[in-house]
Length: 125
Image 1 (cartoon, rainbow, N blue to C red):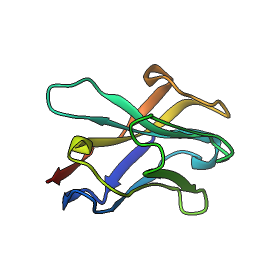
Image 2 (cartoon, rainbow, N blue to C red):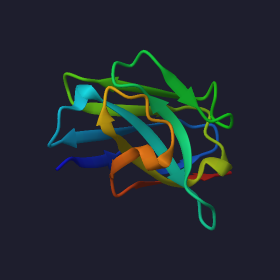
Image 3 (cartoon, rainbow, N blue to C red):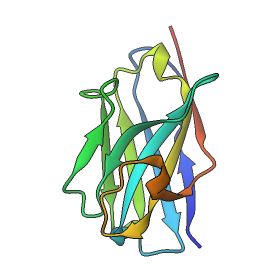
Image 4 (cartoon, rainbow, N blue to C red):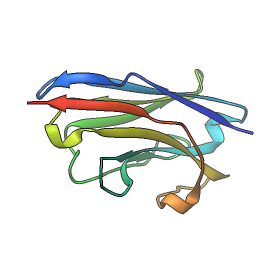
């Protein structure tokens, strides 16, 4: 059973940067696509950034393109989300997720079967 643990959230000012980490245990990390999702108060969970199992492909939400970067270190079983130029509207709980099946480029929420408990990012003006 895979376990995902996010870290790195916090409270920052608009324009600041944060780096989120997601440590994965209990499965062969390098074989699975990964993603960051977020959920703001009163809103549905949305995809922020997705990375394929081999890091060759990434997808970003339009709202974060050019500001956020998703990476993964398969030797450390860890995924990252570098968030720059943070905006108030980036305030949300950020979740990392791992795909259900190996070697697939999962993009839809239903294709991710393992989730962390989330880390809160608060951006103030």
